[in-house]
Length: 599
Ligand code: AGP
Image (cartoon, rainbow, N blue to C red; front, side, top):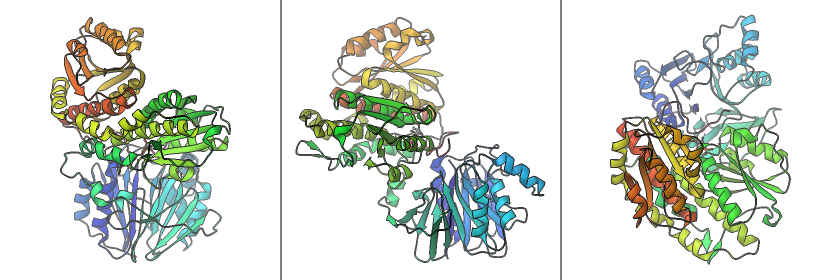
């Protein structure tokens, strides 16, 4: 989604803003722009496409100044082109805005502003904010922004500058925005990576907060103008974690760092045969658990449901956050809503969380990004601690979410006064080592990828805990290679998808050893009988399944509960190598955004 960076201070502003934009690239974008104030006029440069295009155009202009805002746009209203790129300016070219979010009543406001003589130049919903602020501007930018916000319906992370004022006015409702506090300089950004190189001290704005930022100061108020004192948080991530460290892509780096990432998720949470978590509500009183999430996080939720039901013996439901929020769900104060989100900013997941809170449910977040909005709104939480995930396709967050959900199920069982499976705990503790073993298949997987790089469709099949893994494998392939892929419970193919199978259809079976192995073998035979091309993920010592498969990928044998973690690894690598062999932009696939902060 759109990315915002702003700066006020003495540094060379243009490279700083361009660099910030580059660090936000991973969020997904299709155009970018920058606006710098030299106190006499605003200078704006915009470009369609990559930040490098913008940088080329910026070179031919002198953009000096002490205040600037910049933006990467992920199109919602209006095609990706220069006119629609931010920053947007008012008619007099005296003020500029950058916006992340959607203005829902933009059509009505556009009519109003046009009647008053404003010339709207773009097709975006965002430009009207510049004209609204212009309408109300009487030598006080903050006051004008406040008045404009009264008319706006929708979501915004917003930054506004005026050529006559030494300040950036920012506001937030629904879309993330942080203030970076430096030494005699201040930053604003929609995400930490944009400013991490300059400061680790940040303030997270909440919804309906407005901040006026000058070079050495910030004042935060609510919509009524009352001042709010907020803590400055210290970011624990470091700049090196944001680098590729010799890997061709962030996605590959993030796949490869899973042993360490999972070790970090586990650190301090298994001790003396017990699970240590901090859950601030009475686990004994749980009636039911509802898990909501989107995309990859929803896949881990499906695995979590198995754990919660089989280990903690608690009824668990899984809902797409986007569906939960609009279907009048029955939720009570005895229910616990678990929200899973890598970013902690996904708009639908956040809305589902808020809906559950209104209905008095207790809430627990399984989140990676420390300080993100979801972490600030849940009653309790489990951080993933896997470090920044930059590749748009989620990898290490997925395996870590599965680990966190397993820990949660074991913890609930333990808090209910039952014995927990000590062997499972021991195996879980060793899982980083097994992940490392699975990663050693990378070269073999690359060869398999080469065989199927030109396939147009894929089926991914799995059963039990590995059905969600099949879904996740298919999602990875779709996202980064643009190949159509479907995930199904293996036994379901007879009810429809089997009609698709012929010699051109690769079918990926997640077929590691478990109590359903014989059933999977039958499903494979059904595919084989129709000339399907089988790629099988099998346990290290497998002999039987391998005979049926055209390509095999071996993974270390683990107990069933841990198999989703191990089996996800080859599927991540398969998708990665296919996309890379196709020469695609693996880390920034078309049309996608890392953090989906609009509905
Ligand atoms: C994963 O590869 C996707 N890019 C996407 O499905 C993602 O998992 C989804 O948008 C949810 O994001 P979150 O975990 O940050 O909430």
